[in-house]
Amino acid sequence: MALANVPHPLPAEPGTHALAPEVAYRMQPWYEAYMTALFESDRSKIGEKVRVAERLMVNRQRQILNQSAVMSEKRALDKAFHALRALQLCLKL
Image (cartoon, rainbow, N blue to C red; front, side, top):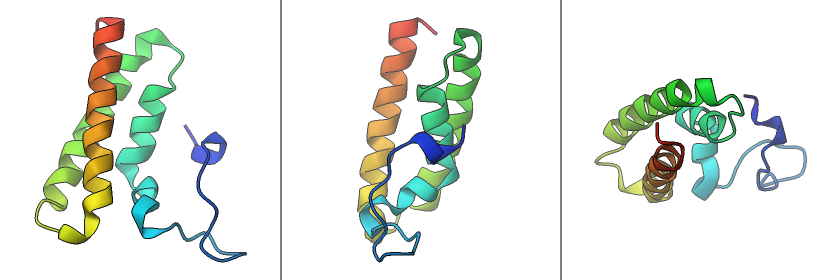
């Protein structure tokens, strides 16, 4: 899923595509996979999309484990894991 339809904050400066540091994680592959899983409309594909997102999210958590400068991304990952778990429970995946 392209993130063109997902709202993003305005760029830091007119004419740029830079995101504020606290939402820069939205450019990470895990975030796109997470959004794709959340908005998948074909129920038969949701489970696989969730697994892909979780795999990317775990990999990213490992990458940033000891980096204090990415606290907003760590919080976003935590919330994303909870959201995917809730989706799985609701859909009994």
